[in-house]
Length: 330
Image (cartoon, rainbow, N blue to C red; front, side):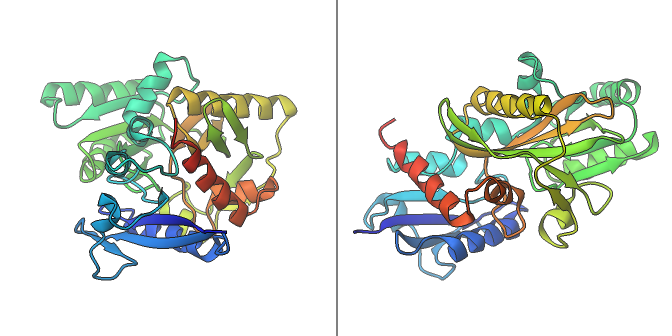
């Protein structure tokens, strides 16, 4: 039987370059080598493409002179999770794992997703969106004052177009707000100020499938090892505790999985995504965000949740490639 030839795309120009290489290594270490032949396509921080992190130019893999059956982008953040690489792959008529251009662009932009959720009555935390490129001084001051009046501290300040908790700051006082907004501006001109949840719970669910044929993993709860679920907790110190399954009522599980599927379809996702939720101290379930290329490192929550649901890492990778190939004729 001929092996399926997979182009694993990783690295990238975003601040999440290192996370992407860790995710790619996790896939390479666990993929079924009897079924799949993997070619690594490494994107350096300067944006140049190489094969297998060498100096061999990867241009041929995108013009078709060397055939691949399917691409597997595992790029986190801008340039990979925002639709850019998906558009490049579509331009050469090849199938790929994960969401298409539109869904990728929507979901990476936290400001757009929050506005889309609000328009469709998806329960979520309150927020204020700042655009440093468009807001003049009076508009900026008005939005900061709105945040101070509308939101209860602590709040979270986030660069709109990043993931992996890069460019995210917890703000406990009014005096810190302006400073942290300008810190986030270093990553993106659009900055989200979001209501923090005090004494709440953070739960996550993994979604798998295309169209309406969706499956959800068991729900897991994150017990953070630091002040909040930050970059170090996710990728370095492994101090965050994942409780699987989360201690929830049957009705809460139904509500969370139904919302996860609704958000997945609303944002036109395909293949896979992880949907994150807050549960307030009063028991209200709120959507936090949706991630179209969640981490695939050995300590990442997406594969952990599926493993706990009876789908091991190796089989999960194979299923994702199968879903990518199934979009060829769609």
